[in-house]
Length: 115
Image (cartoon, rainbow, N blue to C red; front, side):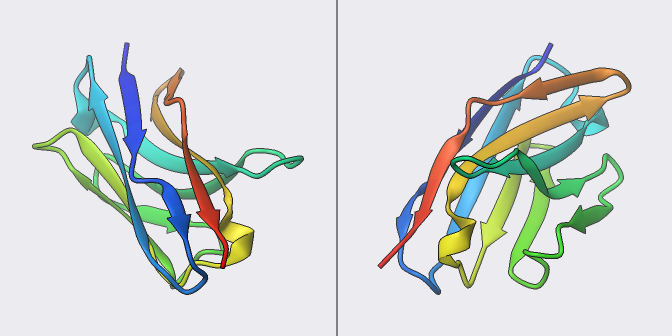
């Protein structure tokens, strides 16, 4: 069992930056593939970025070059650095942990990009 708690969301102007954090507890963090997903009002939840236990990363085309996922296994934390934010990045951002058939979700943190 893994518990995930996201933080770092908020209101930011277009072009601004935010860093989201997801603190994990309850299991061996380093073995999990960690991901960030987002869900905008009226839309399906979509993958933003993932990072494997070995440090490999992948991200959605819509955020490539602007968002960076990273992890600190010593702190059991995964981060999402978001730069050059756009209004269309507005969504609830969820942290996800995956290992074999097990998947866990955090409760989400709201990111609003607006002037």
